[in-house]
Length: 334
Image (cartoon, rainbow, N blue to C red):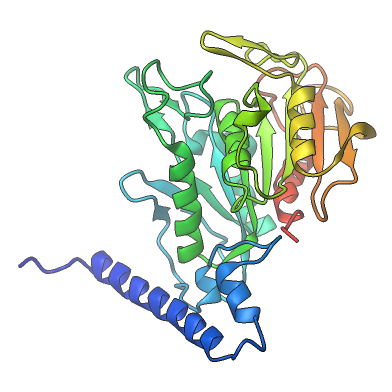
């Protein structure tokens, strides 16, 4: 019989510690006699709170955890250099555009450089590699799986599993779990808002799109704070909507309106906030900010229109990217 590797032994120990923590919560809840339901709420959740368990809830987080998760489909993880299992960190998952990788997205948007300063855990998965070598996310039937593969890749299930594994591995604040995506990755981000709103609390979409039929955005059981960003000169995903070979997509304005409705906002009277400077390649404060009001408690919906910008604005103004990551940090689930 082969001797288990050190990493295998570590994983076995971690599982046992995690299981014992869960067992402790169940027993404590049973012994409470029903007079205090705080433990059962922590385990099973309640309306408006996450049912996800973090290793922080069971005192089973390692102080020096692995920086890879995902099993056969590995994702890279970055944690703050002063990471400690006694703190709880927001979780940010970055979803790259079609054909690139998680590390490319991180470099493009400066995500890794902010892990220390903004104190969050960053997960960078890769989409599935197609026959032509490019990577894609199965975001909607219109884009971007190769023909014949669109129903074979369960990326919703894969990203859900990453969130669950991250919560079991790192000291995560389960009420601050967000995704940041670009293009195909942005469409996948918005699909997660539709189909994993029980886990995802906030989302940022750059040059993204969603299902043309609102009924396809399901189950969407919980309100999610959504920020969409789109260049009005985007030559790939048109600002006013368009079509791929296998389907159409909504305009940027209709996309955010849809998610504002899901967030319980008043979709009839969005208001303009002060302009932002986001695209460093354009002089002045080129970005128009459209905000929806009267949303569910703690939830917001915004559209940033990058006037004069294309599909991949560059270089980014640092304060704008701080605000993008801040969208996730500052919108915990209530």
